[in-house]
Length: 327
Image 1: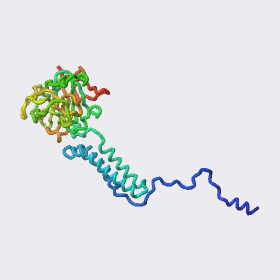
Image 2: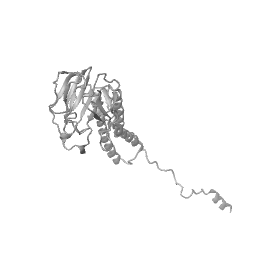
Image 3: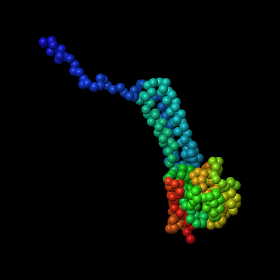
Image 4: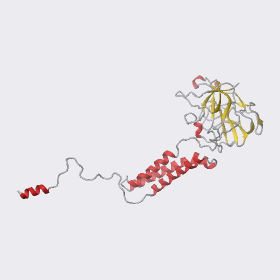
């Protein structure tokens, strides 16, 4: 009896039914080896992404900033995809696939792919130093703001360095209301010079008509040199309609051209008049400069200030205000 009690007392207690029999296995085991080559490349790309946004945020202007914004960010994404593919291939060859040392490199790649191409407005060097030149509406009658102001939803031009502070004006008409291309109300509208300056560039040989993929982004245009490194672009003009020649001095309100249908279909495929101010007369090297309209009516009320917001509604109709020259 004593021995039986001893055996019963020395027996180890049984675990509850259904209880785990041991410690859970680590779902992300560590191989014990150091960082892999693709992981180091992933960290380098994440640091390059931070450096890129640091440079853009400092707004140095010039070729480096234009390249980083227009190409460099997207090359980082391409490189991250390549590194990610190489890392996956290596991980499949050296199992287990999921390891702790591979977690943070994967996060670094996701950071680069998600942050590098993020669609923020172009950080123009003069964003906080707008032009003080007098600019007036260059067309008669009410014109609707299709694109303008801040925010991609109001103005996709904010993603373009040159047209960062661009304004696109259209006449009220829906495509279904236009029987023929010639019936667009904006076509052939007279355009006067919105400011006084010297004509730096004239392009007027581009054909009019429904935009094609290969169309020039801004179409026929006149670029006015306002001095102090400020160039005012008047775009979307009719073929052969420009009156002054390069080098001519023009005064505000002087007849300039007519509205045409010569620009590309992005971001507006219908005939329109585009206005923006930039740092050079060359589209590829220009950076936008903030400007303002003067002596203007906004929805019938006197107004002068920063450019109004544009945008379109669910049916594709412009929802921006009507602008008109003040009497």
